[in-house]
Length: 156
Image (cartoon, rainbow, N blue to C red; front, side, top):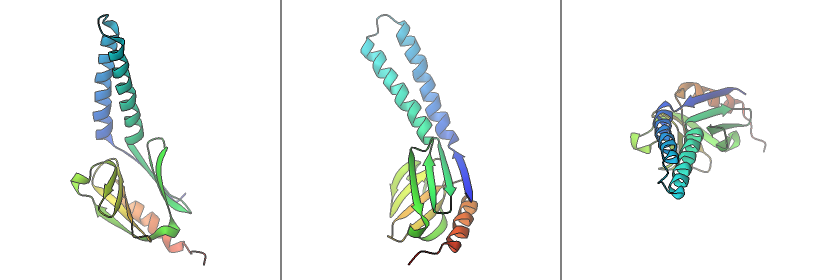
């Protein structure tokens, strides 16, 4: 492993976590109120679980540069994108437009994976599509990819 960095989306944690706490308090209150239908409690419970999972899945982004590829993983790693070096044609540091947002997004020309901020590394693939990986260490990530890309020799 040449590079590994985990970026925390503190605003995402704060917002989703706060909402989840409010839902949890509401759930406790509703469960102690006898006049509330069980279906309402079930709906609030589902909302709590869905939001807790969204917080867990989308509040961090870990980027790794290994011998074979660049990988970006959200949260625990179930949602990931791996880009083999054999598919990479160009890499650069870019600034995302604020309206591109956070999460997994379709942007002009490709995809954005981001949990916080506007800085990203854009990976241009040989198939002409792009993938932007949001990071608070754009220069370090760029250097790690470029260092490895310079050593990569495709088998012909």
